[in-house]
Length: 502
Image (cartoon, rainbow, N blue to C red; front, side, top):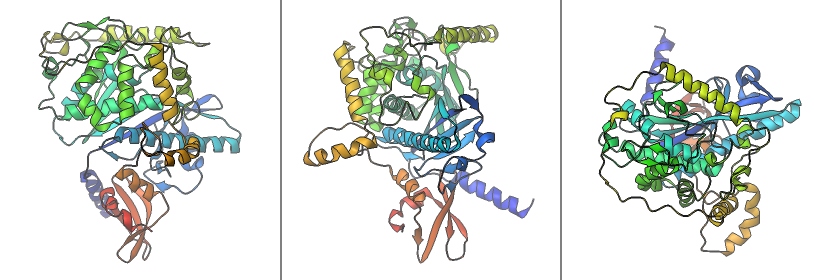
């Protein structure tokens, strides 16, 4: 074996074995690229993100670069993917994570707009998917944990953040972390609510003594009876698609009591989602902020609209960064009125979509094996009420819906509104401001990554070191100014040296 190959394998081993001091979360989203209204593969066209991004960029592997906003962007299997840095688990961490993701989206969108102005092209980002990553300290039984979560997560996640054209919710074990794959949520507020739900449930289930599916008959957590997840389409893991259900949960009325859980109870999807979230409410609250916690349960209780209440997928899905940005409430939700059925938008093709999905269901049923004994479909209808039942549903009125949407449009502030509020804020000492304005602080790891891309230098003893790249998410590459030698420093070490930057 060549000497450089042995050195490389040793480096890979160091990178793989490094563990962070704190449990973390992170998020990534994928986008299809439409150039002059024609979908393209961005990698062969742009070759590298520096083609459309001006200014110095911190290098990562291959076509991946660290952005000035702290995250990263790269090309992956025909899409552009933006990624947040790792963010430690703490109160408000889900809002920090989603804000960080939208900052990466906003930066890439603005750079594409500038590139389009220079070259005479139009570029549109069409949302594809989002992946929520949660670290897992108990390395054993990761696959069983992922399978258990594939039964628990789909219904509450689809009500909180999916749309009429979503097709499934997946869970993948990734070696030290669990990755939940869902459709992109174009409304930032609903995305934070969805992240809050996912992180709260996953971290709570990680603490269970067993990840066996028999836990679902011991605890009062409803899941749709008879649903057996399939294999994930990418990498290892499981995916519950719309055709695994008796009927599509994404295109039905989520308030209709037409679903049977594993205990034989008949309920609506929204009620089922609410009961699941209520069971995990303490863990959800632990990592959320007050605003997103209230918004999540407002959606699950029918006091605020879900995207599944809309007649079709929002238009913002097709032009993320323009029709949807951090600080906005998308048009369809701002104009929503739950006291009457919304009219279908012009040129709506949802009927064609339903025909396509019905064909997918027929193909699945034709080759699906019969359920075997011991699967979730055969669980007996028995469970003990280990927690208090959820509170009675809140009566939905037009006033309550308007109140929630008005509060979101006021509180989801963007940078343009900050100056107008700054003087008034200084005069007020006590006031309740929900997320996510400037009072949502940065996580410790976020601050490390922002330092890395700031252009500053790190002083270690008498030497100055310049950051020149990243190895994965846990190591930064520094070059010593005195002799040009390079060294790896973990982000935990950098977190302890935040005062040593010049």
